[in-house]
Length: 122
Image (cartoon, rainbow, N blue to C red):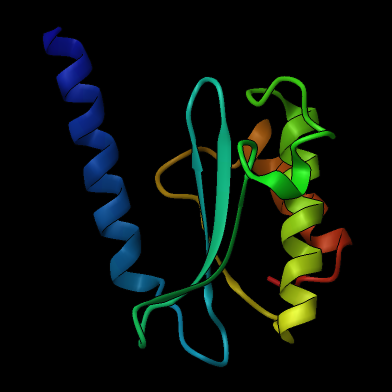
């Protein structure tokens, strides 16, 4: 129990430290990735206005049929493609990537590469 509390505390500190440097503007919003063991979520945020411009997750209707299990790389690729398409429809081309304290590896990396293939630049 104690070790788990330390782990979440360390992750919260990493998130806070990165958020000092990365912020979403109307010209370049922030692409934030959140993951759990079972699901992965991504959203594009304009921090100046305090608004989420678009969001996609493994539990959302946009990718519901494509994803059978939400906690794997295949699901992350589907989320990245769906988010890239939604962003293109809104006219968003460039974003600031915020991995929220997670390593750029596995599902986070797969989502980022799929979003780049779909047309996002970061």
